[in-house]
Image 1 (cartoon, rainbow, N blue to C red):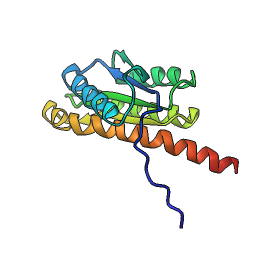
Image 2: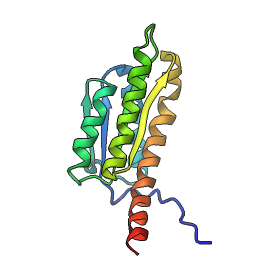
Image 3: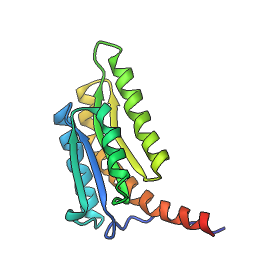
Image 4: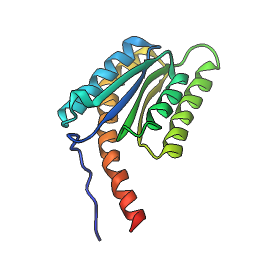
Length: 155
C-alpha cells in the first residue's frame, strides 16, 4: 500500500484568509492563531492575503471571489456564530458553513472552515487558539493534497 503522508511545508504556498468582523474579540484571536501557525510552517508573510467582511454570511462570496482568481493554493474562513435568543443562530451557522462548502466543491480550491458555531462567548474564546491553528494546518495539508489528487486524476 502506498500511503501519501501529510505535507505541512507552507513555504511555496499562497493562502487567503477571509475573516468576519462580527464577534470581533473572538475572530481577531482566532485569526492571529491561524497566521502564527501559517508562519510557523513556512508560509511567507507576503503570501498571506487577509480580508475582512461584516459577518459569517458574507464569508462565502469573498472566498468565491478569491478562489476564482486562481492565485491561492488554499483559503481559510474565520468567523464566529454565537447562539443568541432567536432562531437566527441556526440560519447563519448553517448557511455560512454550507456556503463555504459549496465554494470549495465548485472551485476545487481547498478551504479550511474556521467558522465557530458555539453556545456562548466563553465557549468561543476557549476554542480560538486551537481552531485557528487547526485551520492553518488543514489549509496547508489540503493545498498539497489537491495537487496530488489532480495528478492522480490525470494519470
